[in-house]
Image (cartoon, rainbow, N blue to C red; front, top):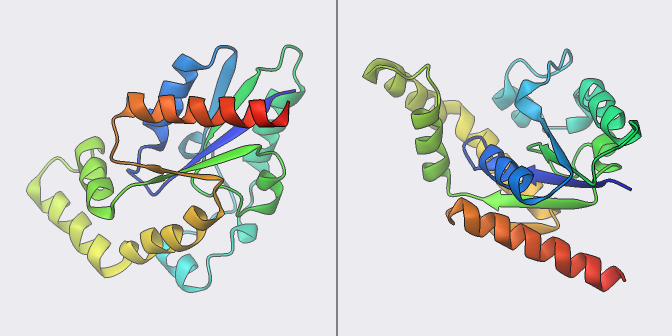
Length: 183
């Protein structure tokens, strides 16, 4: 049986870094990255969607669910499937596949700084200023919504400011302890 692990956080919270670290540490593992999936039924404006209640069941998660099922049902399915997926258990169909959900609790200023440093679209001070203004005016509400919903529904909350290697070790310990308690 494949163990499905969800890694959730706000944008810039460290999901991909932790996912990639776990891929290196968990032999026989695979990963799916939310940002690489083409969702045909997704909100155009995340802030407006959050302001309207942020119901994840409004999203068309079929492309993600199909990829999960393909990984789980293939011959030689991996022992671990890691989902770089921001919503933990909040979307019903995806939640049914998850065995462990980790939320990276990353302060919003650090997440924003990581996004600006990571994203190539912020090449000049004008684009950085525009993004920061948008964050303060609109998108911060979406970040806060995640802290108030996703974080509360995760099995484990990790300190998103920790060194990535320490976070991988912490997840590995949680998985080992959970496995031993079920034996």
